[in-house]
Image 1 (cartoon, rainbow, N blue to C red):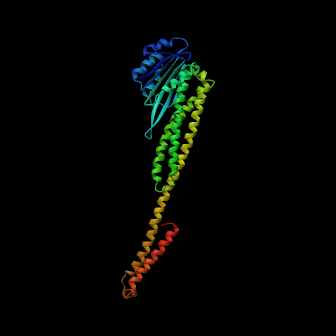
Image 2: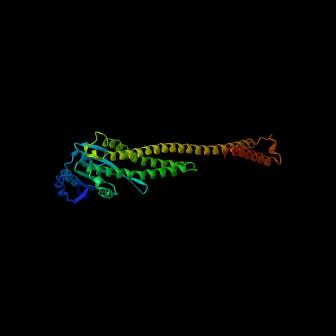
Image 3: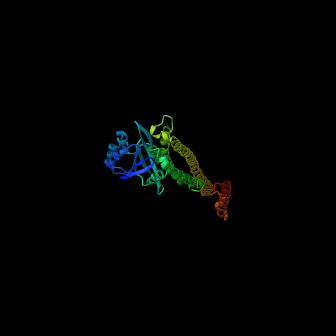
Length: 321
């Protein structure tokens, strides 16, 4: 579905276009066309391929989706893939943004994402002095918007981790904490897979040998790369903390099991002594004086009770009960 199709000249909005008018405006000097698609069909991509003369391999990647974040050069044009992440009801949903960039056009294709980029177009139109840089500045604005949306996700993941850390030493919470930590680790890996490849690829946009379409805005792409570097460093910190937290929780599980084993061993020791006494007095030999003694049975119970009480207090004092 086509969201917007607009022609710009000298940083100013020139006209809203129909699909068949795109090629006419591409031929005009100092003019570039910015088209935004959402969940594009194969027919729409084929039409855009003909209008903008897009490379077949790039169009195929956009059609099939599920690409790794990357920046590829096809002659004088660029093909950029970025991941869009949205947290919905505690789950991270993965979308994709494919951007085709030439010296006089920008085609953005958004897939599997409900969050639009209308604000990016409004921002660009409010800054005509920057929009004069052409399609390169539009690419920067789109990349900057995608990267900026990673920061709130980082904050949410850090908050989840802090909440779990506060419960690490809560009684009988270790197993549930481990489940939550592994779920959090999965989310962090999704963000890592979105950030790390894009950070690596974006490095070539501001170098001396960067693409010509980005030549007038290299300092802006350097800023995007810096943001990605910060996010990537934070992700690595969170991953290390999650690993440490998992080890601590596994230790807590072992400690809890050890405490249970101590209690079982203590009670087993008490009942073993009782069993020994009962076994001796239950042999019923005639020569045993207690069998004929009037106070033999109460005395036996008293000895068993006192012994059990002494052992219980000793185990209790040792922290086993």
